[in-house]
Every structure is written in structure tokens, then in C-alpha cells.
Image: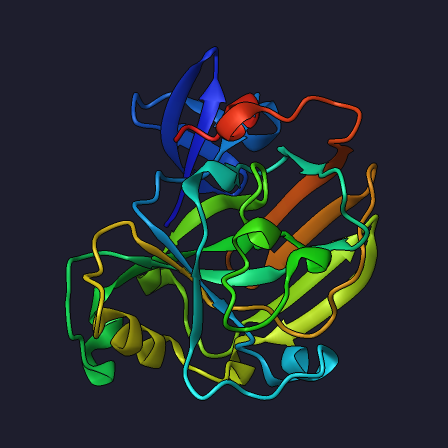
Amino acid sequence: MKHARVIFEGREQKGTVVDDVITFSSGKTANISEIETWLPPFQPNKMIGLALNYADHADELGLEKPAEPVLFIKPNSSLVGHKGQVFYPDGATYMHYENELAVVIGKEGRNIKAENAMDFVSGYTIANDVTVRDFVNNWYRPPVRAKGHDTFGPMGPYYVDAADIPDVTNLELRTYVNGELRQQGNTKDLMYSIPEIIEFVSSFMTLEPYDVIWTGTPKGISHVHPGDVVRLEIDYLGSLENTIVDGRTEKVPTGGKGNEAGN
């Protein structure tokens, strides 16, 4: 089932989506074309990102596979929904998208073994780990400034139940900028698999319901500019689309609230 969280008829509503029709908890229905504002499909607890988890992406950056998963925390204040605006910050010369499968944790766990890890996954969504490459220095300096700006965390449009994904190890990811295909990859090429990531993270951190693990991006990053429309697609999860806006000339909404992130 696809789950969505939106602003419709002036208020926040949750619903499920089938064939472009959203059915709200009230029983009322609407076509997705009628939605006023898309919110991230749920309110995350904490968000944990992986860097360099596709070999081809590491290669394009001239880096080797890390000896263990390289992690960072993606702040919840970065969240925006489908169709929301992403603000290009002052001082940036190279800002890019990162199309990522986001794994949603469904129950609490610590010291989870890889062979049991998928029992702790409730579903998946699309995430765009927007990054300013200028602000990344090395693996051992967490890229907080590079990835933590308000609006740098588009997520959605749907949260899809794990049971509805036939094979999460074989999902195509595609990124388009103004309709041009810029990035393409497949989750079969993850260097650290989802179970391995969950085992590693839970070895020192309790995972809780609605924690989200951003699993990394494949090769194909490219500079985006104000005015560009970026669309991310992942098999079975839909399309996440956002417009780049010039944050040097327009006021960035505090904490993503101007994009109705709902945090």
C-alpha cells in the first residue's frame, strides 16, 4: 500500500493511494492532481545517511570503498515534500541531487543481526540527499553543512509498505533534470546491503520506529541551478519532484516550514 500525507482542503490529511486516487482516513477521496501541498509521507524519528555506498559513485569522486559504512545524520529540519522547493544557498558553486532508497524502520531494535534485519523494516520511500559538494572535505569530517541545509531533504511522495516491494535488492533508480536523464543505478549495486547497514548501525545505536536510513546514491551526480526541476524515480515508489529556487535572492523558510514539512 502507498501511504501519503498532504494538505487538502486547508488541513493536513493522511491517506492511501491506488491508481492516482487518494482515500483519506475520513473515507473521502480525491485525485492526486487535486492535492494542494505534499508533505513528507510520515514524520521521521531520526534520519541516518550513508555516504559512498555505491562503488560507481565512489569511483566518480575518486574515492575507495570505505572499510565500514560511512554515516552521517540528516537533520529533520531539512525535510520537504514532493513538489516542494529546494533553496540554492549562498556560497555554493556545485550543488547536486542524490537519489536514494530510504528504508523505514518499523520496530525498536538493538544489536540486530543481519539475518533478522529485514524483520525490522516496515517500508520504503524516495529521498533526495541534496548536497553542496563545495562543503564536503573528507570522510572523517561529517558533511553537516554540505547536506544539512533547510530544504536539503526532499522525501516522498509515498511511503510504501515493505510487503509491496517484490525485491528491494533489484530496484532501478533514475534522476531527471528538466526531463533529461542524468543518473541511473540499481540497488543490486549497494556495497553495504540493507541488512548489513542495519546490523552495523544497531550495534551502537538503538533503532526505533520511523527512523529512516538513507542508503546512498549511484553514479551520475551533476550540478543543478535555480530554476531546474529535479525528478527522482525508484521502481514501485513513484516519482519525487522538486524545483530549485535561488536562496541568495529569496528567503529560505525556517526549518522547512515554508514547504510544509510538518516537522
